[in-house]
Image (cartoon, rainbow, N blue to C red; front, side, top):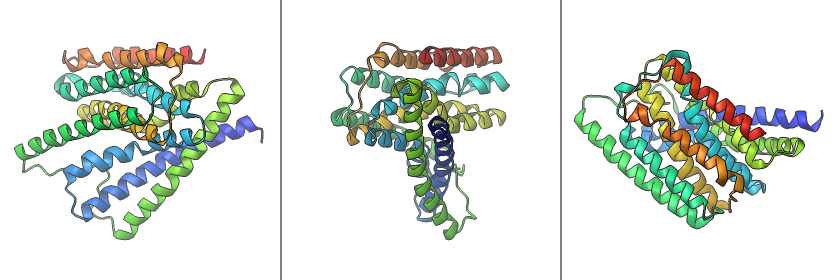
Length: 318
């Protein structure tokens, strides 16, 4: 089999293992925690959030260990851009999103603050351990605020039973431990396959690791968010769709690069500083009229966002 075909097979297999492994890890960890008596509120804010970010985290760590750290940064920046333009654009194009009925202003401001902090630190790059500690401090502050806000909302509605993604009361101990085992095995294997395949593709086509991270890897790791958002849109759970994107973007910036930069330095390519970081910031600001102006995302808006993402990928590749 020619090497370039093998690289694409490795990328596809790696993505599949990451998606399956992440789902099993979240399901196993959530049910284990609930069986051990950990409150559902804590599980939602920690295990689910970190579990769904596990593929991106492992990809970033594996990329650093393999000497292609630029792929890690490209993955995060590209994923955040895709999360707004594509992950919200496609569902809006399909069904429209009634975003006017939900208040996400505080979380959105936190996302903008995380974006500004990340861009500022990038200009003092490469990302090293002290950058990571600052980002993780921001993550801790965000989690503390989220916990207090959720606890207050929970006290205000004590008769409402908390639902946690992945929770299954009928799941027995063998299935819980089996899900954990599958997740813990599939994730590192998937990350290794995807990073090796993506870096091989970059070399064969003359693309940099950053470009492959910004496009192929970023699109692949955004698939879970896209699937979740499309499902939420069809169920008219727009708060889940919008909250999914805002939360994912914050975790990408603060947790993924925060932890990965403790493993090894992450260089910041000049092209990323000149354009890609600002595209990411611009994509984040696109949400201003929908968050603060309480406007709905109609199909026309969805079409525009999706088209902007396609144009961005074409720009990166050329």
